[in-house]
Amino acid sequence: MQSPAPDVIALKPAKTLAEKDLRLSCAICETRKEKRFCPAVHGKICAVCCGTEREVTLDCPSTCPYLLQARQHEKHRSLEAIDPKEVFADVVISEEASHRHEPLLAGVLFAVAHWARSDRTLNDRDAISTLQALARRYQMLSDSGLHAPASGVGPAQQALAARVDELVTEYRRTEEKHLGYPTLRDRNVFEALVFLLRMAHVRTSGRPRSRAFLDLVFEKFPEAAESPVIATGTGGTGNLVIP
Image (cartoon, rainbow, N blue to C red; front, side, top):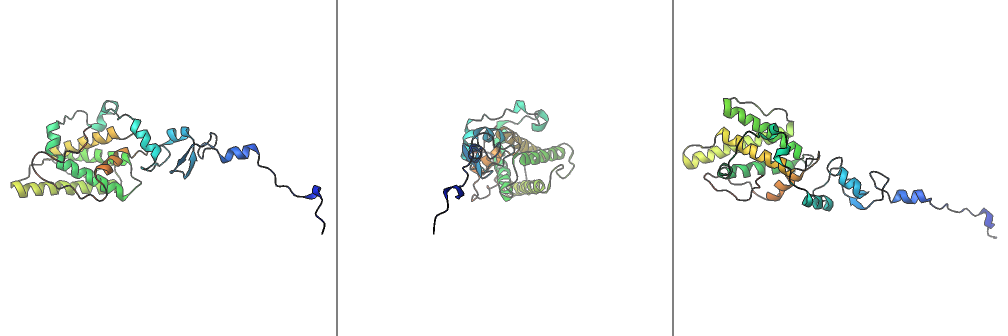
């Protein structure tokens, strides 16, 4: 059998230069060349998109090496740059007061860690809005004695608020058991929540999907860690981060 004539052999068209470039372009902008693998998009993106979209439109996992590297070079936010109303700037919290109730602070942070691990869609903004709502409620309790649920938060945030209330009750029961009476006042709880709220504002990057503060809490309370023991007296764990 004779071979077909050379002029009738079907040749596979070569890829155009544009098609070759498209295969190497950023998965986000599709313009610049890809430089690094992005676990958020499960593809390769350019350095520019990585920097501008990180924790803005991208839900970056906490293990991303580029996110961790960026955090090492980021400066902590200044409280002076944040709306004074959001951090209760008129409230003065002494270092002595923060140390005196350090077991309570540790307990609240542990509750935050457990809460955030239960729903990986939660981020720093969710934590901050919940701490703000709780602080306002305990401020009202301290000033007027009126009880009101945490307002302006969703079901997930209400779950954290309920856990914090349980923690305060547990703290007071432990004090009463050891001292014969509880010393923790609503004002003390309010100041502790303001302290943690300021910590969250300082430690978050401020980007919409930032989890920098929550990752810090995870670091201090690993998944296998037990709930901090609520004890009376001064002192504490000595491992809390002060804004």
